[in-house]
Image: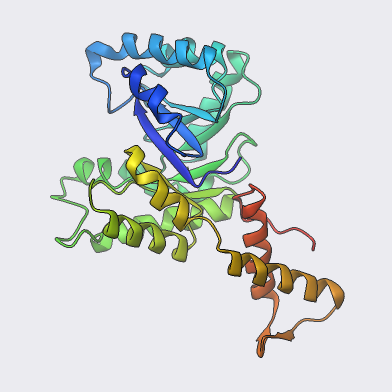
Length: 289
């Protein structure tokens, strides 16, 4: 499953769900949490269940409410209609994922994937290293910069120019490394400003530069810039193929020269990752050339 772009859609807006199918996103996240008012939760559950029952043109995730909230009602409504995955907000490490795994299994879901939002509470930060090996359902890790400052009484997570303040730069980095340590996709969080394409492009480009493999989106207009940022160029793919082929042609060689530059194991790993991503594998696992 390729996850360059994941577009949030409010669960109580079936009209937007239909429009989102043409957005170009790699997956939709049908939302039952923050974008749905409490009095509209039941309406949203019904709308999402109906949409899942008739649409299967792309991966469809559902963001449920957190563990300890109304998650059981959410799961009971949507799991019979087989969403491709569940986005778990306010996850607090591997224990949260194991809990959700058990709930899904009890409802007869054996294949649905899990994508946690892994940094929305203070306790979650100290559990970021616990996701590895919990369940094969885990398909990625993403993070958030909105709930956490509210939880600790911080005024904001961003500087005036839009960049993160030091505490949230740290959280972003920890989430990035946690995803790669668990061997799953590292999904950059949202860019909250609309109608600012240049800054969105720069934000997404920084995400890919730093090691994220995809990004969350809050509006269809953001999808082209996100997809472009997380898609390798023809030159990058060509370079990666030449590197993999060169090392395959000389097994046992630790370093070799390509285009006048000495390349070794880290460059081979980078080339393998580029080719794996183009095949739809966003995870960091290596493969033999």
